[in-house]
Every structure is written in C-alpha cells, then in structure tokens.
Amino acid sequence: MNLVGPRVTLRQWSAADIGAFTAMNGDAEVMEFFPQPLTSDESLATFQRLRHSIEERGWGLWAVEIDHQLAGFTGLAEPSFEAHFTPCTEIGWRFHRKFWGQGYALEAARVALRFGFERLRLREIVSFTARLNERSQRLMLRLGMTHSPLDDFEHPSLPVGHVLRQHVVYRIHNTPALLERLNQDLAAQVHSSELQPRLLYGGCGSA
Image (cartoon, rainbow, N blue to C red):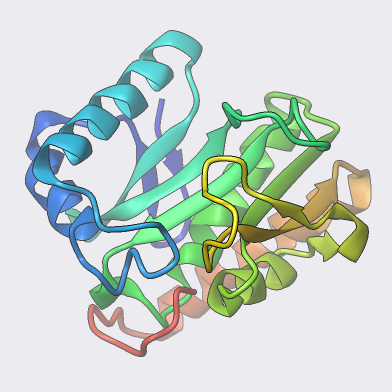
C-alpha cells in the first residue's frame, strides 16, 4: 500500500532504490548527527531490514518517492533500545540533500503521522534526535510536536562522553483536532503545489 501526499509518495522499498539509498547514507552531511556515515554493506543490511519490516507489518520506514526519484525515507518504527519512554512508536526521516529546504520532509511526515493516528489508532507518536540537531527539531515543532526537558535522555547506543549522546524527545498525541489540522495542512499543500512549480534543488534545511 502506498501513502500519497500532494508531492510525495511513501511506498515499499524496491531493489532499484539500493544505489540512491547507499549514496544518501554515505553522505557525511546527511549523516552529521549520526555516529558515522554507513558503509555499503551497512546500507544494504539497513535496506533489507526496512523492507522486511514493511512486508511483515504493513508499515514502517517507507521509501519516499518524488518525481520518480528516491528522495529518502519517512515513517514509523519501534525503537530497539530501552529508555524511559519506550516501548513506543517513533516517526523518523532522512533525505538526500538535494531535496532539503522545500517542505518535502514536512509533507511526508504529515502523511506518516496521519497513517499512524487514523489507521493504526496510535495514542501517541514520539520523535527523538541528538540535542545538537536543531534542523530536525524545527521540523518536529512544525508538525505540532512538543518537547519537555524532563524527557531528555542519553542514548544508550553511544558511549558516555560522545558528543551526540545527549538526546531530546518530542511527543504528539492523537486527538480529533490534530487529525483535522493534518488533513487541512495537506489539503493546503495540494493547493500550493498546484500554484507553484516543483523545484528539485533548494536550500540547506531538512524540511
């Protein structure tokens, strides 16, 4: 099943995505707030895991297609580590740099949130990132997510003292008002995309 927004399509992964996926994960700027870029073998293992997850559950971190190109991924996942806010469902994203700064990540995230709340009937979705990653935090705020310093945590997969170990958590709850706003925001993007030409290259942000 594909999830379709005004400009983006969230879909299952295909073998044709491997090259672009590997290039994205090997880009040091894209992976700035991860411990290191992924090797080709690590990207392939991640690709297989993402595809299998969607095959098994019907949802996950979907490939995002824009103008017949793999732009990145967006979707829902269940963290494998233990923290005070787990078990939970998180929303996450990653995009090739040429798709930054044009609202694609925001649109894809809205589509994924709507699926999580309407189809999966989740009560809450969280997102987390390194405290230093202000770009992703801006996107979380634009989605309507909220942050409490009491939720901040040290990521257990990173060693003590690592510059990225300090993480922040954002939350958003399923309410009728939120679903109405998500649908209104996506409808507004439909109108906007009809009025404005698509650009494939833009600014340096992630949303």
